[in-house]
Length: 371
Image (cartoon, rainbow, N blue to C red; front, top):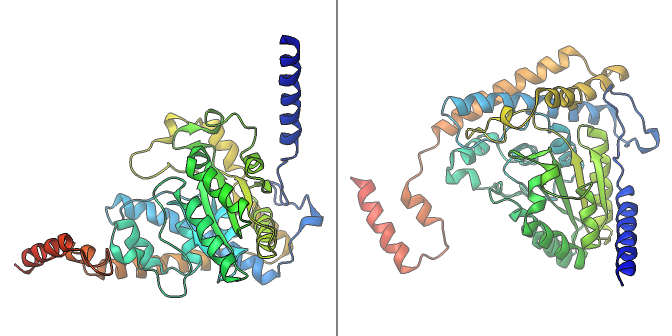
């Protein structure tokens, strides 16, 4: 009996190794910006490539300014994004306007490029209710703070799309730490069971706050977790915008063709702290690791690629930087000029028809605010 048990364990290990071997990292551009996978190149025009680069440069400036504004006390909660621009922006670039984004708290850039005004993103950071007042026709929800909860929401939104017969998808994001949450498994399992048109992106930036990915899971990749839900999974070089774009675009095609959801793991890195709420990455990351990933910077890589094609230069980059600075200046003033929220504001928008206890509270605070 002991011999048979050992044989079964050995077979199971062999099966696992065979599964893990299937999840090789998909890449198109290497660290030097050279094409290493010509057959996978997306059909993007020079203008589209330039636009994607503009968005990445713009967002890097937005991240720098947001950190400064946070330190000045002019923003509230903020999760830095530098290093993850390819993962975030190339994935959004692969969507259509009608698609729906359900972001995590680090995914503010995607919802901005999907149509949320920058001033409202700043108000969301401040906790102002107007920050979550999404304009009509902008298919996003406010960034989710609860880790992994957006995966269940995305499954539901995607199922609704399927029932309506629309050729659209719901896309959501989490970090590597989010894959340790029950909501992650419930979301991908539900979407897989009903072939809902969803795209689940895990941005593996190596650390869930301070916990390295190796201590979160024994799995060799996070993409292979798709196997448990019976859906396709792919691991992508998350510092390569072209690879991310292709992976998401193909996942979208599968979804709208009725083939169900896809799980995409993007290998990426956040250069800053987890959030601006006191996290110190030097306590759990080495300078050698930081240097290794700085050489993979998505902006540097994509810049080299575009410059070699003769479609990007310093003047274009500087114009983008100045545009970002001006937009941020205008947006933060708009946020500053927004009337401060009152308790009665929050109570009045909680429910369409207030129950008696909230009506009582509303009247109490209304009287206080009038004094």
